Each structure stands twice: as structure tokens, then as C-alpha cells.
Length: 171
Image 1 (cartoon, rainbow, N blue to C red):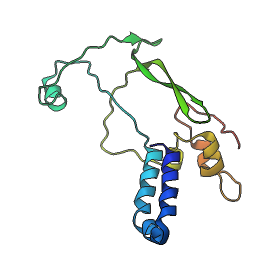
Image 2 (cartoon, rainbow, N blue to C red):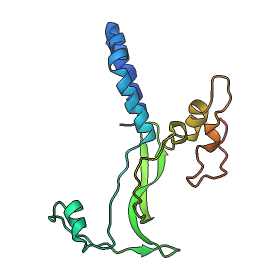
Image 3 (cartoon, one colour):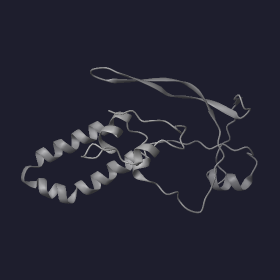
Image 4 (cartoon, helix red, strand yellow):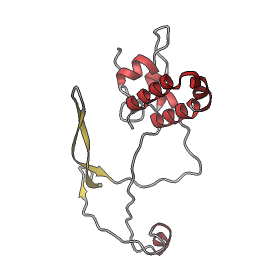
């Protein structure tokens, strides 16, 4: 569900609870809140895995449903640097209307990336990984204190993701 819908459901649930609202706040709200925070940091995403060597028997045993899987071939197109890409139909724009949002899709050449395994999970800084929230919301709520001053997280929030040197607009 979308974040606004989740927020409205939470408000409606609280208002309907009446005398049980304290029970809801103490019992159900903490897990609901943590779940919503998790969605902010980790929005839904999808992955497809490809292999440069489909004849690896060990791979078929582990990833190919115990050697019962199928192998599909895809024709790739090299990008300007010669790296192979596959055109994927993805959301490339959003239009807003009074009663609905409309997503625009188009085929985008997507470069393949090698999987890099590591022994530990990377550290996640909650306030520096809020990439799915609009700049207006980030600057108006998440990165601004009650005193009107911006957090230091605001300056580094987009570094390393193609946004080096990007100044976030004031609201």
C-alpha cells in the first residue's frame, strides 16, 4: 500500500478504537510503526539474476530448482561503454490528477551488474537512506528540527548516489 493510505488507515483505526485506543497504541502501534519505518528504508524492489556461464552444474543444483530449471536466452545491447544492457519496461514518470496518479512507463536500457558478496550486511543510517521520500517532505519534516534548523543528514543524504554536490532546495 502507499504511505498516505497506510497513514489514513492508522488514523481511522485509532479514531474507531474509542476506549481501546490506549490498548491499540500500546500493543499494535509499535509494530505498525516499525513496519512503516522499514518500508521507508527498504521500499519494494525486484531482482533478476543472469549467468554468463549457463553450463555450470553447481549453479543449476543450487539455483535451478535441483537441476529442474529452464534456461532462457536474452539478446543484450551494448551501451556507450560497451557493457551489456537489457531494455526493461519501467516507470519513468508520474502525473498527478485530482482523483488519481498516473504512472508513465517506457523501455530503459539497464546495465547488468555483477553480484558482490560480502561477509556482513552494510551499515544503514536511517536518515541518510530516505531516498523514496520527496525533497519537500525531507526538507520540511525529516531534516528540519522544531527550531527551523536543518540536520547535518540533509547535506549528505544524496552523496554517493549520483547526487554528489547536489544542494537540496529549501522549502
